[in-house]
Length: 371
Image 1 (cartoon, helix red, strand yellow):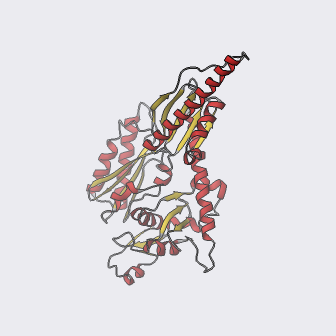
Image 2 (tube, rainbow, N blue to C red; image 1 turned 120 degrees about the horizontal axis):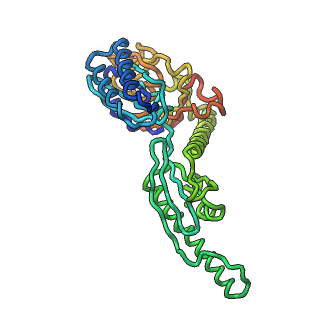
Image 3 (tube, rainbow, N blue to C red; image 1 turned 90 degrees about the horizontal axis):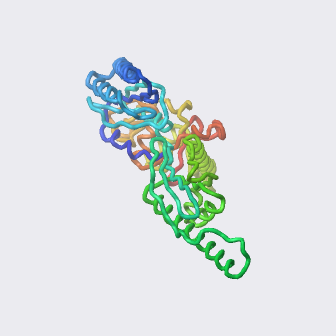
């Protein structure tokens, strides 16, 4: 998951309020439920030590969700009496989660707002295709392409003229497949779609698949559905989830391979809090892997004002010349370091059934930029 959108949370040090609320229930008493949720979050923040301006800012932001049509929920981050960032969620959270600390509590976002691959669906037939974009929060048309309209149907006759006509039909089909593939590639480049779903009869969708650039062929999956039978939301979600799972499994294999030392006994991956802290201080983290509920994620570490000022013990920061230090969770401190150095962060939750706890001892691991 690319987390550059979290950068505003790390521009200024200070105590942070973080709140996660559920907006997935749409009933007649929705407004009252959301009002009660805002009240509960505010009380919890006050109990944790947040001051009145912070509580009021978060409360006002949550009260503003009374009429929001968001299907899942919202995360709110605030400091110094103002809301700095609000993030729509793509999965429903446990309602009313509130946190107060030296860093914003962002790790839940990995599962509640991450790994939401934008999907480009193409409904293909012999004359062209209709495109649509799908994600957890999006379902909209994305254009269409129309190829040659004649000749389109084969004849059963066998004389020379009819065979010549059939060849023209074959050429028309292949021409239209190239047109659809080119339009699909252009739409993918414009939208940045992660996954392509090709729907239609076997021949049409296979012809388009083969005409796509090689990089997109690997991102495309096929489905026996036509324009008159659009994909159900459940079917799209299953294919998107499988895409995410396969991608993360590939990352775990990279991590396993990188843990093996080279001839000089240097590995290209590290796991555990001490090793990750050292890598983060040296800006060597290329990718951070997290099992959000694992033991090391909530281990206490110490942070300074700058993201690369972190240590397993407070005394280490003094040794590094940092005068101020605050306790923080290991996962949130390492995510901060990853965000400011443009390192993606991957939650291993989608592959726990495949890998168990075999990847990243204690729940934290990282690929390194250099050994």
